[in-house]
Amino acid sequence: MQISLDLPQRRILTVSDLTSLIKSDLEESFYDIWIEGEISNLRIPASGHSYLTLKDEASQIKAVLFKSSARNIKFELKDGIHIICHGRLTVYEPRGEYQIVIDLVEPRGIGALQLAFEQLKEKLAKEGLFDPERKRPIPLLPGKIGIITSLTGAAIRDMLNIINRRFANVHIIINPVPVQGEGAGAEIAKAIAEMNEFKDIDVLIVGRGGGSLEDLWAFNEEVVARAIYNSRIPVISAVGHEIDFTIADFVADLRAPTPSAAAELVVKNKIDLMESMSHLSSRLKNGIKTLFDAKRSALREEIRAMKDPATRINEYIQRIDDLSIRLSGRISRYLDGLKKQAEAAAGKLNALSPLATLSRGYSIAMKIPDMKIIKEAGEVKEGDEVNIRLNKGSLICVVSKRTP
Image (cartoon, rainbow, N blue to C red):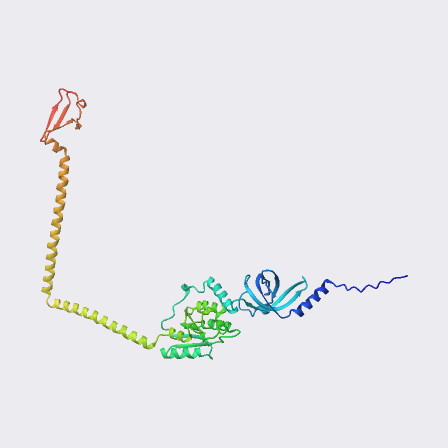
């Protein structure tokens, strides 16, 4: 008897076939997912794509953020940041690894724009763009003011009305720019550079009216911050409301809480200036009058003296006599003092003088001819001549005998 075994047909897959099947199933099942985790092993090569690992306490998964999607992210990816991201699961076939292709990223616990704001603020502060030492004073009375803002907003109307009311003859140059939306930051930076080409602009106002953080974001862009920093013209930042702070505020030479406040800060009130000038003018007139009165009195005194020169001469002679008497008295007292000092010194010298000793009956014996003072009998011999100095006069003696 013959037995036949019909074995099923085997399907043998290549590695590529299997990987392709897995890729197809994964992408079909996980094409729209949200995932959160902590960034680690972040790499951004020259291509501009971002390669990273998302991890939690127990697991990890590789992820990629292509350059085209990264352009829409306001903040900077860093290791350690906890993020929420959207994307699709796929397989990178050359290595047989599954990964998430990310197209949207949000920081967890803080808004993306707020995080971007804090990151850029920290970066520019370290570079010294906010240092108080580099900030320049705003001119007291600018002759020409440059304004960079939108022509369609209320901010420009408010600023022009206030400036015209406070000081009507100020020259104003307006460089209109978009103040929100894509590319607004680059346009603002370009306008700042253009204004710096003018040689006679004294101060720049850069700003806009209030709005949300997104609306004001153009003034938080690095390109605007660096344009303000590089401006040779002092810059007033006037963005939003009093509670709004932007990167431009920190870099500018002066922050105005609102555009209207910037207009009030940039030009003084003409009435106030006129009152101040009037006050200073009065002080100047009074000072000149006081000076003239003093000079007039002195001149009158000189004229009086010229009319009666003999009286003035006698006054001078009297002053000379008085000074002469005072000088003579001082000289006399000075000489008396010197005399007393000399007498005291002479008394001390006289007490030490050998002449004082001779006056008490002593004498001095000196050997002839060298007149050396004899202190011992052994210094002479019989027959030597000796000069004996007395208090009054001296004796020439011959030694006839020595007594040791």
